[in-house]
Length: 146
Ligand SMILES: [Zn+2]
Ligand SMILES: [Zn+2]
Image (tube, rainbow, N blue to C red; front, side, top):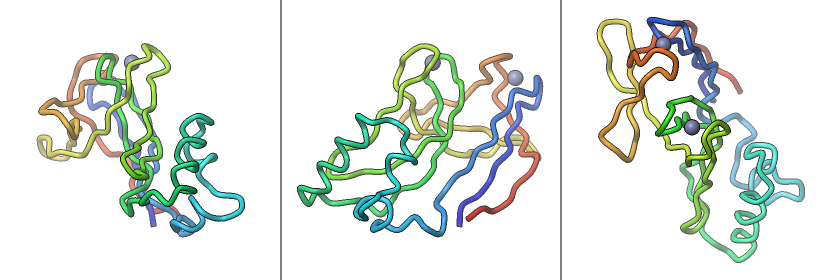
């Protein structure tokens, strides 16, 4: 089951409704190996999908660590939820629609009471609001989806 996150900047209200994790139908089989794999729909990018499925056909190893993940642009900090996966050494690279930089995954980190910060996974760097520069968010609603 996945989680639904409604994150809002605690100062200016910039927000993202993000679906994270995996749904019930998200087996390796359904996503990568069935006759009509779910991957194209999850990824929304033909080049990435074709490259990944070609690797799967060549028996590249599919990592079990996949799902909808929170990504941020390292330059302007806009947030997106995108599908993360790894096949062999291949991981999808998503581009920021505003500045073309490659989006980076971010993870939840502790903020002050009742607030959340987002940290870039591969760097010692925290997310900042693209509109006002604040670095804390409030989670307004939280639920599950399947
Ligand atoms: Zn803000
Ligand atoms: Zn950007």
